[in-house]
Image 1 (cartoon, rainbow, N blue to C red):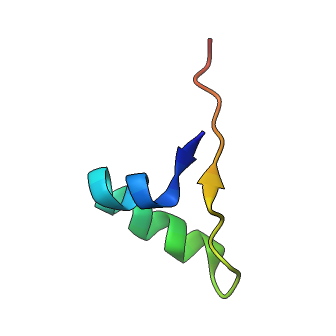
Image 2: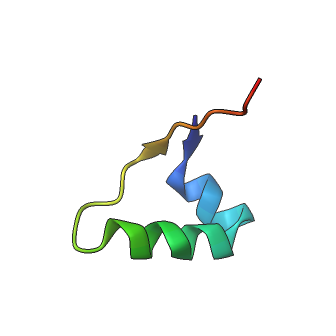
Length: 37
């Protein structure tokens, strides 16, 4: 998982995409992802 604060700090472009995808909903505190192992 990754916190949205970390994403905002290190990947601001990805954070902006997240904000757009969430629309009017609350942005989650943590994001979970599949690394494709």
